[in-house]
Amino acid sequence: MDKKNIDWSNLGFSYEVTDKRFVSNYQNGAWDEGILTEDATVRITECAGVLQYAQTCFEGLKAYTTEDGRTVCFRPDLNAVRMKDTCERLKMPVFPVDRFVEAVKGVVRANEAYVPPYGSGATLYIRPYMFGSSAVIGVSPADEYQFRIFCTPVGPYFKGGAKPITIRVCDYDRAAPRGTGHIKAGLNYAMSLYQIVDAHEQGFDENMYLDAGSRTYVEETGGANFIFITKDGRLVTPKSGSILPSITRRSLMVVAEKYLGMEVEHRPVRFDEVSEFAECGLCGTAAVISPVGAIDDHGKKICFPSGMEEMGPVTKKLYDTLTGIQMGRIEAPEGWIVEI
Image 1 (cartoon, rainbow, N blue to C red):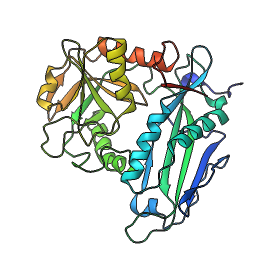
Image 2 (tube, helix red, strand yellow):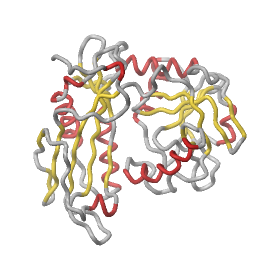
Image 3 (cartoon, helix red, strand yellow):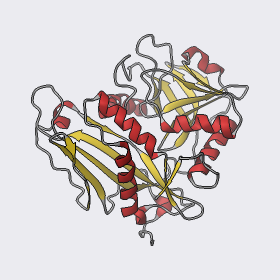
Image 4 (cartoon, one colour):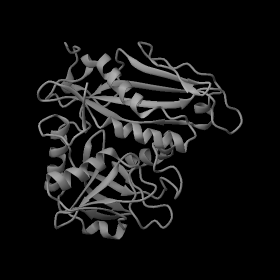
């Protein structure tokens, strides 16, 4: 298929309208068959549940052009299951996992001309989302819902390479114990906007959130999980009931153990042990891994031995291996790569 006439190498990480998107409506207790449509406009009542009580959730994944020219997605079944968990927590109807994956494939197939070519540094970002569409004036779940998927070509999250960033320990809490931190609800991200804007205004790239109960354990940032590398080469990832289960983080744990022969620990991480780690990174769909060079704890700076110039050596191996799997340069575990 001929690609769109786009300057792929200069794409930013921003929204661009593509040809088709998937839409399915939930009414009278059932989802309809859904359609692919050219209409990018959402039309809902002014009293829709999503507008009144933020009843909405979303996912994010990517499609890639592999080295041998195939178009593939990375582990969409895990996005489907995570959205299922989110919907159940928010009293929203579950869009079936198998239909979710097929809808993702359909949207990518319909917009294949927007999948950036191999080697361009760009990818096709895919955004499934769901919201309460019927009128709700009393505090209760909506009766009707809409599930949609759109996609947009995006450039690399970092222009010119993944330079280490500086983050700060945030005084605000991201999620309460037994709250909604473990699901991908839109309201979680709305609550983080004040803090991220303030962090940027103060000269920091991101926030490090600690647990709301004791403020002694590392949680995550507003949109990514943490990974740490010990001085003896182990991968450590924070564990908590209020951390979103990142698909990238879970994949990196497999890569570390099965491909790189590393010892992996998924456990609670006390903030007072962070200064003992050799490397630190943030992991997520957008950038895969964002290396962290320093953490500011109210004026006291924790600087990692990997420095502020480039990604740490172990983190780089993790990054190169996972992106190699995604791009088809390295053989993937069974089921990780879904061909379109």
